[in-house]
Image 1 (cartoon, rainbow, N blue to C red):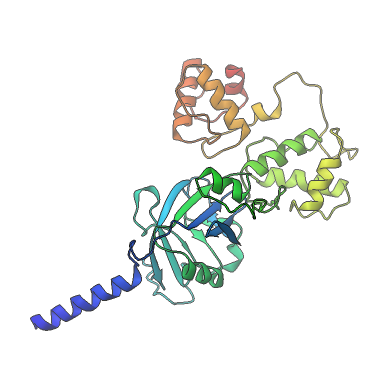
Image 2 (spheres, helix red, strand yellow; image 1 turned 90 degrees about the vertical axis):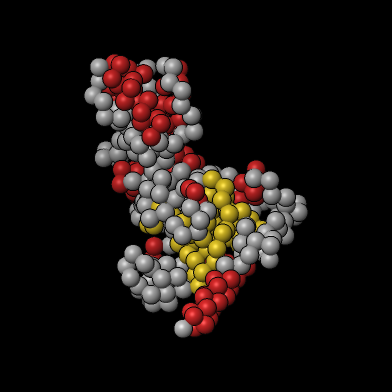
Length: 340
């Protein structure tokens, strides 16, 4: 009986050794993965070159997929979905057929990962609980290439992949320095977020199409403004901002559209939309940066990073309490007015 037990233990150890390559056997100084949440793309670098770019899905809210520099700590084929009691390899498994575990937020490859999916239509959107989803065939390719200990940089940025790589100490060979994240004007749609959305909202507002705030989040109000702009400019009115819509925005004059249903430009003396957008925890963009700057001027020691997190919310509530305002952590007209 004891011999049989020892055999089982040895088999288990051999299995684990096969599933999780050792760091010494998988040196990864020549590799880098960058994930940009602004347009949900993943870039893979190897031997100082940009190799491939993939479309991915990230967290349903901005905070779900953590940002920072992490590393690959394990690789698992057909990982079971324990929460739903679905075995590995089952077509219903939302983790797909490959799991590339990351040590994000103090975890060790069991919580956050780059993995496959059971819903291909979710790729390119904000749909996950925090992991990075890929198409199953594409994650297989990456799984076979990537080594344990490979650095993984997760950001929300309008910069090119090469710019992000250089900023994180990755040396490029100089022959591939113009590879963009997608393009200087990435395709945006409802659910997109980040600096590119902030730029879109600012341009639409300047052209007379009010997005009801500049917060870097492509929601229903931004979609409605986009559709109105597209209709007025004889572009397919689908709410998706591609190269044709970007070009039309670039060439449009900063005046209100003739269509009576479109928002009209006013000569109000109030602060511009970027400072008057209603923002709250989870918001990000120039309006949040402006808010954080004003709070620092009021003596609150917070970071100015354009991300409305718990620290910013705490400062807002403290300021609202001091000014006798409703202490809800939401920055609307009254709080902006007190800050101004």
